[in-house]
Each structure stands twice: as structure tokens, then as C-alpha cells.
Image (cartoon, one colour):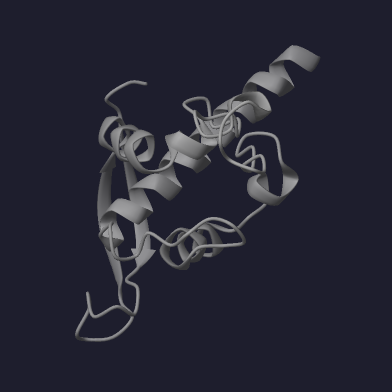
Length: 131
């Protein structure tokens, strides 16, 4: 992954990060740092390739009882809105626990941006392969 930086405009969350209301703020996200945070916190389940095959699943041979969601090909993940993904990371969803107490709001947005960027790259590669 390159060192390229993604500019995002996001509404601040309601966790007290913004004392003046729900204003929009510009956030600079370095995808290299976003990848690092993803690998530390998400990769153990969702895998380094975001394919749902992390060390806890290992194709069904790991200790995890259910396959984590494939974040690249599963339509639920690929069509999920960024805000919904942020909420899922913050509070958890199904078997996945929440990371709101472990990660700052900015770090959670970085993970969302990383996942959405990888999804877009995969969709672009799939479209190019069809042509």
C-alpha cells in the first residue's frame, strides 16, 4: 500500500469529540497508518487480505467457530455505508466485539477508509478483468 493520503470530510461523532455540535471537519488519513491499525485490530479475524481468513479462522482450522465476514466480496460489507461500518466497529456487530474503547474516533474512521479503499481497488480490478 502506498503512502498516499486520503482527504475525507466527515461529521464528528457524538462521543464528545465536538463540543459545538455536529459540524463537518476535514480529516487527513494516511493509508499506511490506517493499514497498520487495521492489521493490529481487525486482521486477526478478517485477515491481511480482508478476506475473512485471519489466524483465528484459518480456513476453518483456527479456534474461531464461525468465518468472519469477507470485507472484499461479501455484498453486506461492500454495500455498507461508511457510517454504518463506523458504528459496527465502535459498538460491535453479531459475534464481533466493539472497539470504541480501544480505538479513537479518528482511528476507527481510518479503518473504515482503509476498508472502503481496498473494496474500491478490488472492484476496479474485477471490472478490468471482465473487459
